[in-house]
Length: 210
Image (cartoon, rainbow, N blue to C red; front, side, top):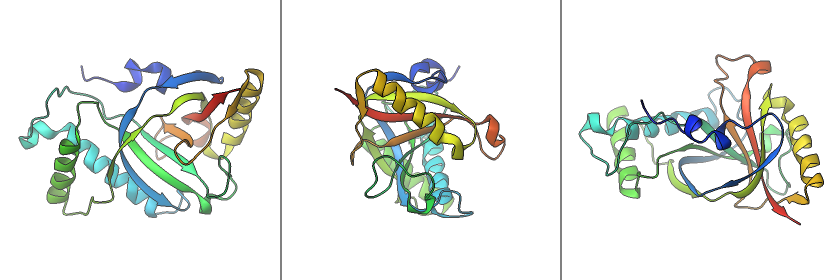
């Protein structure tokens, strides 16, 4: 059976629908940066997702292309994730999506090296006749965070964020947003197939103890 990060690391990908503290190790990702409303039809956000999946599946299927990665094992491509911020704002203001800055990411296994990433970008470019140069190889060390499973529409996330903030106040912690520590979402539902009220999204905020 392919290795499934969601099942093997349930504490990171399948939290309960109540706030909890979690300590995250460094993880490496494919990443594309951008700005603007993610709901814009055919916009830069949707284009970024296409680029990420193009490189992610090139890495996963590397052996079929005759490329060997040391330590490779078969795995399920992890879910799409996103780091979100707005310039001059502490956290995110969901009412003004046009001012969003984002880093869309897909996790890659630890056995993937920079050289493997470079090969995958070049291979995806060759096979798909498309420019994948916007994709980065990014390591993120989130450290201590508060997280919970948000059930429902993306526009209803502020209610879950309020629960996370209340939890922090009760547990001698505060949010710790910075240029390196951002509002983080993990998308467990395909919005093309799942109605808004049934979507599952992991919400995660960086924190520090008082």
